[in-house]
Amino acid sequence: MTKAVSKKKTIIVFILTILFGYVLFIIPDIFFGVTKINGGKIGMNLLWMALFQFLSITALLYASLKILKKDFSYIGFKFENIKKDILLGLAFGALWTILQFLLIIPNTGGVNRPDIDGMLGMYDGSLIGTLSFIALGVVGGGITEELFNRGYFINVFKDVFKNQKMGLWFSAILSIVIFSLGHMPVTLIDWFDILIPTIAYTLLFLTTKRLTASITAHGMYNMTAIILTNCFYFN
Image 1 (spheres, rainbow, N blue to C red):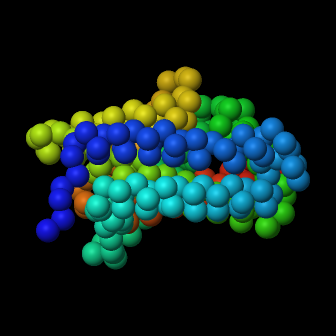
Image 2: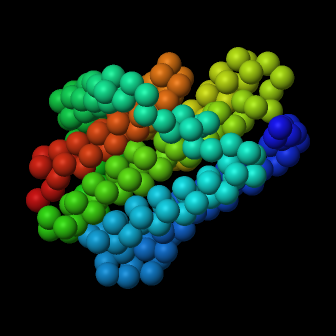
Image 3: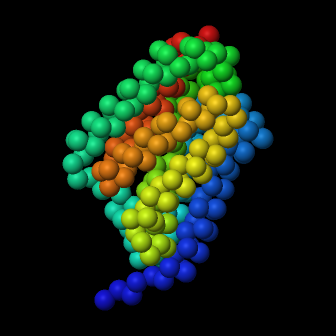
């Protein structure tokens, strides 16, 4: 019989994993942003950023879960009812894309918005560059961020609480706050743009108890946002 991991050990491993994970997320961003190799955060470099984030974070989570005597299925990476989960994810991703690009973005500055301006600086005008940007949004964002910020953060942190239900909701709320702060929102529009989808991704995860729907929603929105920004605003 496997001996349960103590709450003390769980919280220590959890804190170290989260701290180290955020370092891994920002390393490629800082590296390409500072060195400006091959133009910096642009073109194929975006693909290397995505691969680094995915490989390093999944390796970190594997090691952390192994120490905690758990596996990826424990944090919701499983595929029961996958068709239903994908449809749920696609529905939210499509709805949020429509709201953003037909209503919110055009009425809050359009091309002059800081986030749109920042994205425009990451296009190089080539098909490979655009596909690399999509890889960063889907692999680095949709998949890796959901594994780390939703699945791992919520399901592992709740284990340190005596009341698991209370722990689950506290962990979920804290994950929303920390994930949103990680995107460094400044204005009310910034907060709105990050909080609404983050809450939705979290609710998808909590209601299905799986990551499939939230990964689909997150990845789809990131992909369509990259494509539509390229179509509407990139000259």
